Image (spheres, rainbow, N blue to C red):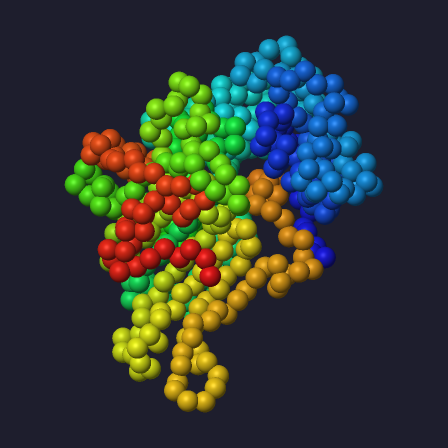
Length: 490
């Protein structure tokens, strides 16, 4: 059993506690950290929303959320000890009013560290922060957590950053991207900077290309209105994928503190290749899924599930991009990025494809290059594919086999926290290293907006692909013309 270092007592106020994010992720994460001894019993977990819930109804809601996350298995003794931390206040968070008085009184009697988690739509961030200031709930020991996406484009992101920044200093703003809390993502830094084997090879001298795939087998799952106004580019590429790209491509930071890491990530974002109407069609693919089969069952196409007013939607549910980091380390190395809904399976992975040996000693078909596969989900781990001799007499025959590190097998006795659990504890500690800065968010939006504008200027075609596949043919062609192919499973 892993031992977890307790954090100092804190109070956390979750705005939008009756929403899906809170019930699926935040509340179970807090219970798990409490059950493992990381959250002090004197801490307070305070839910707020517009829903008219009694205290008992709120406790039941939290219990049901924790049961769902634990497959209906819960430690009753730990649950009983957890319940006293919970309380609920019905308020309209967008405007300070007398309804806030009970919340203010409870927080003022609590712990010195106060966390406000805004589990609400980004358009409400500034209003809620202003309400917090008017209520006197902002001090030197107060932190605020913002969920991605921060805006829908660069101007809206700047407005949010400026509005929140007028209430909270930058060191108190935690911009959440849960991908940065995944074990394999954090292990990417360890892989690069704690192993002399890899860092000397981590450049255009040895690496042929990089692939990043974030594939989902699900559709929009009741998020039709949000997703149709967002699309795959804004929903996944602008945040998750660009953050992964930054960790792969950044230079070694001076230290692992937040400022040092952020400086190197911003350099990567600013070095990314720009697009215009002349190169956007050859280097990007946008597509939308049509009806198909997922896990052996028929599923409708994207437009079929939309309300009538959205049936003519041209929102992309799939994006593939070929780009480059224009700097000394990565010159000439293509980065292939891909994400989509209703794909063949759910997986997130990074492929580091090394160059083939300069001379083939072993005959035709034996010069397969080394490949490092970092799997983020569903089965976290990494594989390094190497050429080995097949046993037996006769002609020397080579085969590519992996050195395999599976978290499930290597750490089978460790029940390690999920991404939200880890990041919530980092907020409580005040550790910003795995959270995005204002400059990072805005640099990512600047590059994303450039692609969206280039699509519009070039009147970029919207292709289609059958649900349950790995995307449209044009995505495969994006790599095929370079003599490469997507990695679609072992």
